[in-house]
Image 1 (cartoon, protein in one colour):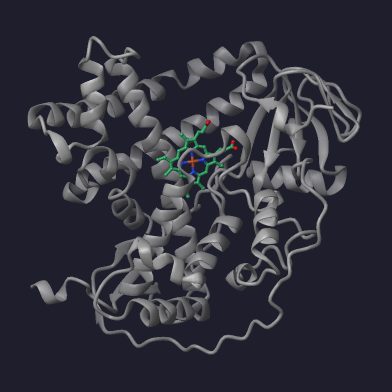
Image 2 (cartoon, rainbow, N blue to C red):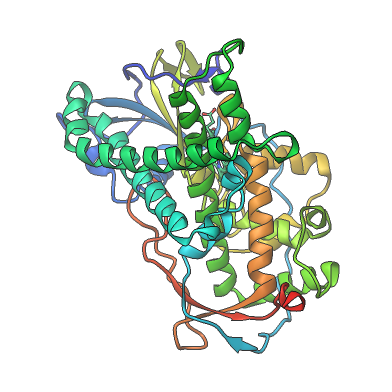
Length: 434
Ligand code: HEM
């Protein structure tokens, strides 16, 4: 019997017939059951129709997994029962300017996928950072609309035409930025240890004898994949995790105490520290569990297969609701609660690995799982740590004000409102250099 492991991505037509699922209406099928938050609509439907059910979204025939069916049967994760933490708020030291919270992680993470690829920082040119943020946001928005355009079936081209102008505009802006960066690299002509990924790719592109012929378009597409895949995702998780920490001051203070006891008060957290910072790792995991930036991933069945007793024909689009899997009350205690401690307890490393592999899936699974998961985690650990190490965060004027955790409409897990926070310097790692 084929399982989900045999399900692979294709771009072909969608068709699927099975019996389990809500009653459908003529023409629109089950479209009326899909609300403004795609992953939450699917989660509610699976509460009624089970782990695998069938939907017809307009012209698209799809099936949905609430959880992965190759999940082995094992006991629930052991969860820490005592949740009392004792820390109190740290005093504010000095005020800095009021800051767009959502812009900050993007500026910071410009130091990672982009910097590794191009040895430049978004923060060197503030306008570049803002431009990239806007482009990534527009690309995600456009992606959602075109993805939903699939419900038009053979008429999906109409959907594409509707967004053609916007798509061309985003394309031209991205292309202009990439060309600017490529030109700067060509002018610099760096050699040896100074080279970054962009230099190496340029060299391959210009090498007539290279085994694989790479055009300038290939090069830009590859860099763009890293940009879009790595930038939007990481920045959203950083934003959500910080928002959770601000709303949970005990967790914030516990994390700061851990960092200060392990790293001291003279430098920022480095990659090599992370292994000694279990609470930091738990906080990042909990942020990813509650707020996966790609809440629903898709596959198409490459061949006819049978899963959980259902026949799934070839080329069926399958939605896998990562969001619902990571909030499943059968697996996670108080699934909607931000509670990093749940990741600190496990009976054995081996069991922890099994549990996480099949229930903790912010990076997807299988051969099309996230290509940058390890890098993503590194970015999250370093950035979340630095935000907690260096600043106290105040929301609005009120001491007890909370960050609004509303999710934006659509197929991604974005914050609904730009969040404004006041960062108050707690520790300045560069103070001794001035
Ligand atoms: C917090 C950070 C990140 C999260 C939560 C995340 C999540 C995901 C998810 C859920 C998928 C789909 C996996 C599936 O369908 O099974 C994916 C795919 C992908 N991600 Fe990430 N990602 C992150 C960071 C990154 C970074 C830093 C990069 C690269 C620099 C990256 C590059 C990619 C690529 C290239 C794919 C497509 C893989 C394929 O189709 O084979 N991601 N990511």
